[in-house]
Length: 299
Image 1 (tube, rainbow, N blue to C red):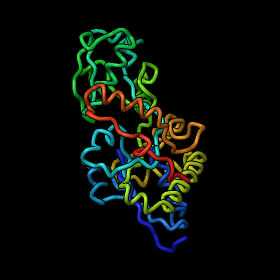
Image 2 (image 1 turned 180 degrees about the vertical axis):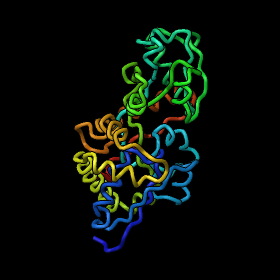
Image 3 (image 1 turned 180 degrees about the horizontal axis):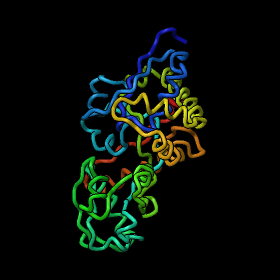
Image 4 (image 1 turned 90 degrees about the horizontal axis):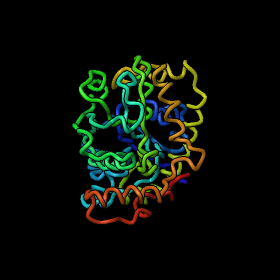
């Protein structure tokens, strides 16, 4: 064991929220320092994978499909562990609009984000329910999707299951239709990505990092209102509501801790994700998934 401190800057996927609490808890408890790590959470920035490639950060929390789709540009990037291990995406509707089942989406407007994977997932979803893209209208949406859904600008929004508690706490009852119930693979949603050269030279540090995250997860599981208050009070990006974050945590916890090996990739499910990208023309070649999504650096 080396006495050298290893710096690990973790570029977040989104504004700091419940799913990042395990990192904060581990740091707050001094677990990283005891293992010779200096861990910093970096607020989300554009071109995050490029920043890992350039060495601006050691790890980024990002999406598996991005790693595959940008493989030609950044062939040195690999995923060393999954944070959110299951696919939480699906379609959200407001109960007041009367869309109670997928078939009710016919002749409705569906808003999706910038990700090219989004349209492919919707096509699989529609086909599963005997609908086609001729039966609906697709419109683009940015980070203001929830606000625009509530304003009635469209009928259905591509969203994540753990975002539902935020809407419901604001008094907007909703229906959620998971993609994984409609033919879309249940692959990892958010993973830790790093440069292969750095990863290979930092095996010990990474094992300690994931060990600390496991301990951090155990701590957060025991949190009550006081601890969540402390966490949300420290978030500088934008004020987070304690009770809201607690509700989101309850929704996302099973996606992080599914009763299996924490942070492990399900390689077979990621292979299915790659098939969607390939068949949809988003990849012109298939990659060896086992070499890109590795479990060997987990504790």
